[in-house]
Image (tube, rainbow, N blue to C red; front, side):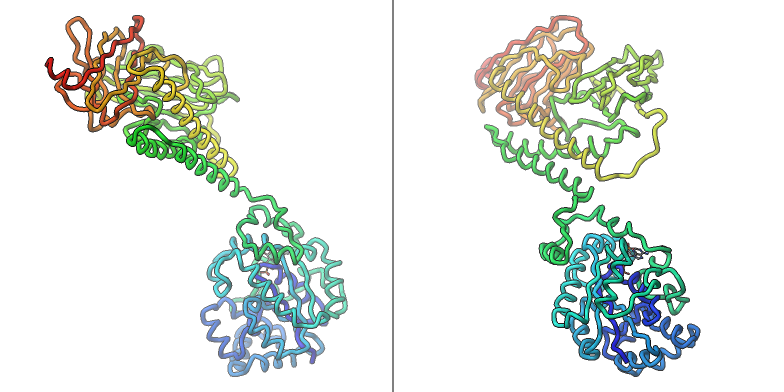
Length: 630
Ligand code: A3P
């Protein structure tokens, strides 16, 4: 009686396919996995299969085939073998094979060197077929296998190392087996050139080649089995219908060679698989983009050195705020097919000299290619100002309208935004965002604007997908860098050129409201100094005066008075005013609290003013000097 041929491999290496191919050979008997080889006795096996019940069917299926019986009879026969040792069961099987050789496919052996060694002792003349598959295909197939965690309990720690651990164990085992008694077959040539591969295998293992080896889907071959005697092995094999050469590479898309250990790379190389040459999977683009975003944030943080401690600690907070703004802008609110208006700034997200008196409603859009957005809503009668502005690539201001130009008698509006000639708000075709700004003089009395946006004829929603996700993260990174770059350049300019004097600010760099005129000063005070600012409020839709830190964030306005507008400012009968910027309440009616900032911006905005703006004057005093006269 010839010793069996054992087929060993890591999981998901194509061993079921190979088993069924071999099952067509008239000189071989190759049943589904019987799961007897790893045990010394059937009692041991029974205990194990109480837990892994789905592996009970293979031996029964073999018995049905050998004895020509049904499931129940096969179960009874299996029970009669209960007290035997495993070698006795092999003998029982072999007696029923006639001249055929038993082919026992058992991937469970791979992680169990002791069982392999014991089998080699039981069957000194056994032959071994080791089927190897690309580690990338094995890892991906394992990861995507239903109930992988359960099926693979007993294997190594991480799925990523299953390929290495099992194949290394087989390699070590076969090192002591004479070369003429084992063969290594690779999955890829088996499915792409089965004839050549089978010819070589037969030659190596010492069996005659026959055509049936190439037709795994002809005849029964125990590919399946009835309830109670299900064929154990790859559950999908039976339904594939043909040898599928495309599976040689299809799993590799999505495999990240970085995800497996150096030991895997090295063993793969020995076995003829070059992992270094594999293109990284799409998800690695996301990892890369995230790494670059973190890197950028880290560099910004590392180079953050402001003169004052307070500015340095607020800088770290600003960095986090801008990171979170980037996530909102480009990840959460980046869907240009289903845009929504969201607050771009607020008490905990401030940039480029936000106005505490303004709501900044932003939505991501993409104009061009005939795309048309509809913005509808309503502005309350007593509203200070509502303006709509498009932003083009790179933050360039585009087309804009203010409320008088788009709101009807009832305060309602319904406008089309597109690059087409009939649009009320017509873009150039490269617009990326729309911003609706609402200014308030008194948030208690003025109602917020009602606002909604939709893309007309929007395509159906799409799933999150690595390439576009990575692109969005790239935008978040560039945005973060641009915010810091612009903020720091403005700080350098202002803190050297505008010390304690007001000047009209030009340029679009800081995302202004284009209907505004800005007048800015860099105040710098000693611990015991204050600044008096004197000027006149011009005729305008809105006038406001606000203090900012070096990051152009308005100071904490929820708990301190750091800004005034034309309504809250106390003016003289002739319309002139005096504002006092001070670290403490010195009893001035227009005191603005520096909240401990010895230097920063003081900014005046005049919205739709109809007079030429005159810069106010400034005077620095010691607190005691002011107090002496009041
Ligand atoms: P996937 O279904 O995950 O692709 P094993 O039998 O050792 O567990 O290996 C299972 C793998 O064998 C399957 O994994 C599949 O790739 C491969 N396989 C099964 N039937 C096949 C067929 N007809 N043609 C090509 N490959 C097949």
